[in-house]
Length: 201
Image 1 (cartoon, rainbow, N blue to C red):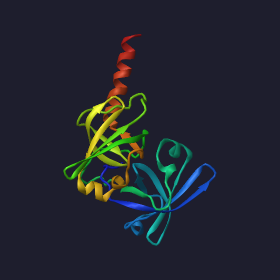
Image 2: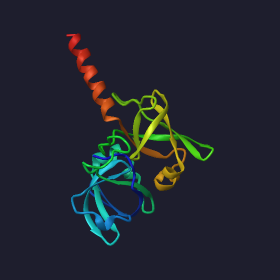
Image 3: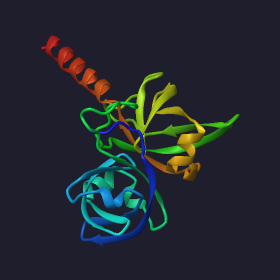
Image 4: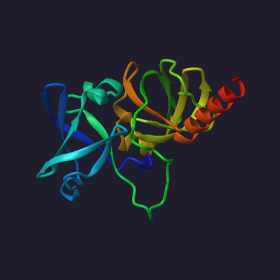
């Protein structure tokens, strides 16, 4: 489980493909602190550390992960948002993020707004995936508040700190990002569907 508060943006140093899998090696400041089998969120995708060396570590993304996220587009030199899993006694500064990406979205607009930025994202209509005004959503693993929620698109406001310490500063119009919708909202929708279905039998 994660909070959506990115620790830093790591840099991809190596990509290796092995059949349907992709091994991703990343350089970051806390690589030496990681352990084999530890979970780390990469652009919001929970992956397991399988190898580590000086200042770097490697994770493996399987075919399903590559198809449902933007990890398959990574190349050496790209920035990846990183977050280690939460500790039980730690503060929840963002919101509950599972590290299970629901789908990708496209950045359709970036507006500068007096020192902050508004990003607009558009996604394909998929059952149960919705946003609500002032609700939470994880974009590339970053816990953000939804602004201007509409059918299949929404905006988020990015403050300077987030812009500088995540890969949001690298996003452009047309960039593909990972979305994880609020788990509480998904449960509410699912229970509503079960309730309505049972009343129509």
